[in-house]
Structure formats: C-alpha cells, structure tokens
Length: 103
Image 1 (cartoon, one colour):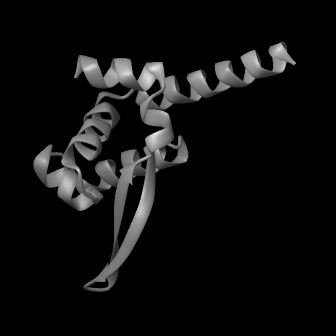
Image 2 (tube, one colour):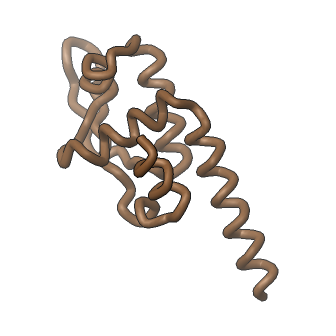
C-alpha cells in the first residue's frame, strides 16, 4: 500500500513540475494566487504583458494540472471570458510553495 501512495505522490509531483517548468506559467500562477480575486487570461496578459493567445494556453495547462480552477465564464462580444482561482488543495504542496517563494 505504501508503494502505491509513494508512486501516486511521485506522479503528482512530476505533473506539477511539468506544469511549472515554463516561466510564464509560474508568473501566471503567482498572479492568480496574489490577486485574491478571479483572474482571466485577458487580465493576466495585460499585466504580464504577454500575448493573449499564449497566456490562454498557459492558463489551460495550469488548469489541466489542477493548479487553478475555472470559476466563471462570461460572454463578451461573441467570445467567452474565463475566470480562474487557485486550487486551494495544491497551494500547500511543497513544490508549489517553493515555486511561489522563489518568484
């Protein structure tokens, strides 16, 4: 049983490392965590500054890794703006804590 738990923890750690290996994703995660409110890729791309297309791609990667969660979808001029918050359960993970402290 301990082997299964250790293997699962290793898999989670590897997924987090993969998601956070890109500097732009680390910046986005820090921005989402520190904002205290839902953040959209559009908002983040203006603050970073970075192209919206790549920012949206990084938001999806962070969401796929479970680091941020989609909270709201707002229709705006024929498109949909997505808003995200940090995934509270992963913010206490040592890898995430270390990455956020180094930023």
